[in-house]
Image 1 (cartoon, helix red, strand yellow):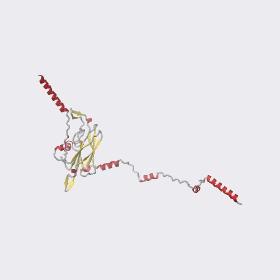
Image 2 (cartoon, one colour):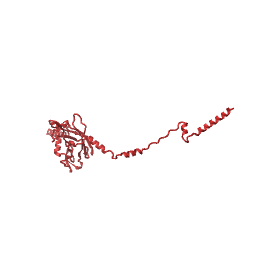
Image 3 (cartoon, one colour):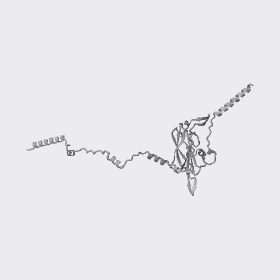
Image 4 (cartoon, helix red, strand yellow):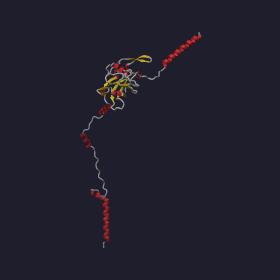
Length: 284
């Protein structure tokens, strides 16, 4: 009877220990994307899923104005609407420079409108010529950490195949539309996820250099100095007066009225008197 009780306690202890180890264990494995499993080039299935769920350009705008239920390691939990932030696309610009062997490069600014920091946001771009399909040229880049109430800028370069997606009577045609998707893998809970996907015509995307020039021109002062006001400003400048050089010799000093030195005149008179006395003495 005694060995049976010991065996029972031993089995219970082993089972309990195994269950505890299974719950406490953390799997450190390499992340595998869908594109690494499927055959072909880099796929954009994650962007297609976002388009089918939320549409583009806020066509399916359903902001969450009520508390949401989220899944946690301890079960389901209600998240107050005030604690739920939002990610938003601020601007999209195309860089004018073209690197040999690379496709077009775009600059996307992402805003974190929440009270919590975001460790990183996946930004995906898809070039389109017609309808979207899984093998359309695309690229995904992850932003840096975004603090609450701030924005982050990220550069995304499409594959070079985006510049040659069709043929029109021997003329190569590139992508005509661009889909921009932030949080493309749907990692973050947001108030409104419909503003995460935008579809833009290629011709409507501004160049980054033009945007910088417009900002620089708008920051200049609005006052313009006319030619008349400029000449008035020039005439009002004080010109220093010319100072006459000082006399360096007795002749220059004598030419100036009131500049005769009395000491020199007295010495000259004394010399003249001495000469007259000598002449009187030497005369017979």
